[in-house]
Length: 95
Length: 131
Image (cartoon, rainbow over all chains, first blue to last red):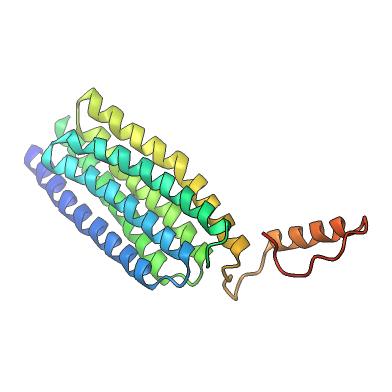
């Protein structure tokens, strides 16, 4: 029972790393291609969310919880950045 | 006990990664800023929330679990606020909607408000959106 569970967790960790990495890359595609500034802000938000997920998966993979602090800061700065961009767009940034 | 916890963490990781991947596919494939935004906000937040829940389940320490739950709660609180603000700003700036959009209640509301404000004798402000 235990070896099967450990193997399943290891495979899940690898798959989650892959899926979150692909999600980050697709967000990068939208960041480059997005026709307007809010598109790019949304893509940046997705990239930041994916980074938080990658930090979480890394915590499980290595058993090393120090980077969770970085995830807290990342989530906070992502929110502040999106709000600042929203103010900038509404104050008259070009779409 | 340990085995079941590991299996639960693995399932949560797979679900979270799948939701994040679906959000990324949606953000590339969908036709419009607002549809893209709902794909990104809801699905990606749920996926990362599942991943953080896996961390909280997997690690037995109180500090790590508290951190993970804290991050998940913070994400779930702030993602709708941020998405609402950026969507509102984009709508007022004039980012085009998808041509298949049926319901635009904010436009009707704004035209009605403009018509009402014209009643006391104010000069007509034009048709375009005024920010």
